[in-house]
Amino acid sequence: MVNRIISWLKSRAGPKNWWSGVANFFFGSTPSGKVVNERTAMQTTAVYACVRILAETIASLPLHTYRYELGYYELVK
Image 1: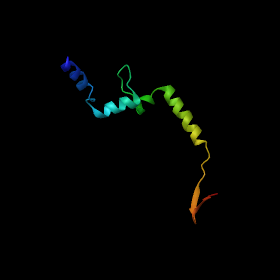
Image 2: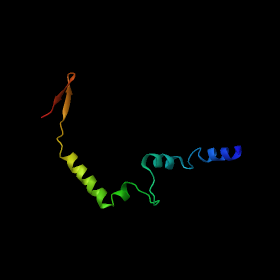
Image 3: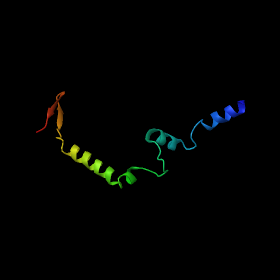
């Protein structure tokens, strides 16, 4: 009985590949087992469209440039 408990704890001590365990924790794994990364996600039209909308929205925001002079920031015109 004790050996069975120890074997259960040993198998859960840590993943075989440390980085894949971290990636699965933060990003999850896919049920199909397919690898999903930036390149493969961008091949999906829905992901591409969402990224395009976000990028265009951010690109349309105003960009203010400041210059630091004499201890304070001044807006550059």
